[in-house]
Length: 208
Image (cartoon, rainbow, N blue to C red):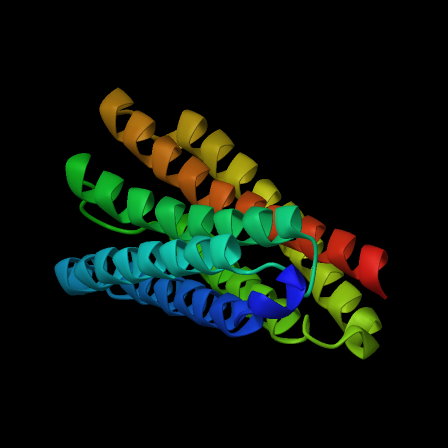
């Protein structure tokens, strides 16, 4: 009787898709920021707004989870996926704020490359999440996750090469420290995307 009285599924997949779309939007702003650094303030403000929108989606997801008796996938998976996607938005915001706080004046080629990889990862996260409501998409979800893993490895390589270059070529210690921090934040974005990929893979393995 109780099961019939309470909501059965809620709108979790819609909320996941909304969250993923915000990740793509924020990563696109970060890529544009690095490509056109003179427009930093505009892109940073957009990233900040998107992060706040993401917080609201997370809140709605958790609120829906509390009110839903029977969920379409494991409750813990819903919580982990929503939290992991929010972490991506938080890191993109942290990166934009750190650029401002550290008074970084220009984007290096490596910053631009890392931002582009973050955007590519975000797109794959969105692809994977968009297919989650139908387990017939299992192999396509796995393919998106594999591509996220590849992109994370590429970002790690770019970051390490960029830091090595800094130690070889940057004479100003403060500049080295500032740029290294931004490189590491952008690479961490791809790490969080990989976390989402791992969660998606686990959901598929449990439900396909």
